[in-house]
Length: 161
Image 1 (tube, helix red, strand yellow):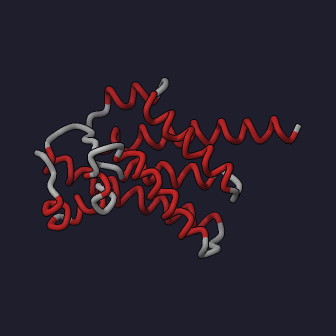
Image 2: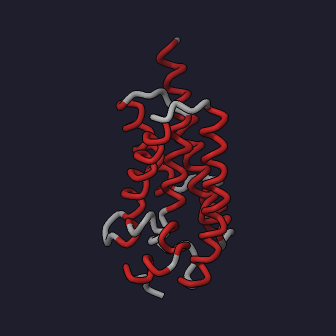
Image 3: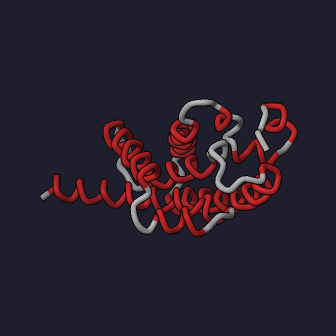
């Protein structure tokens, strides 16, 4: 099924998984979803919550998103449709938790996350090709976020030494 804007506003699950409709943009919806994830994380960060509470909020977002993606996949009837960008939103939020609060690190996090999300190195490519369900939609971007975060931590360690 091709998702229309009217579908997004009539279905709570489609509204969430398309990033409030951003996933319907014709060019680079995942990139725009990643930007939205960064902005949402920055909004949460301005609440000055301890890392435990910030992590808990993101975990709750993941659980809600998993349920919403399951519902959306039943409506859309295509595996991992490009219109679903909640995985990029959440992935970017995970990367942002792993970096210092500095624009240059945020920009690098964005670039690396998009690189790993698009290129899908091992085992991301295995998850993407074998899990054609809600878990697969969300997990490949979570792994891309971890890869990006690990690279940034490595770069920071090299710069410190």
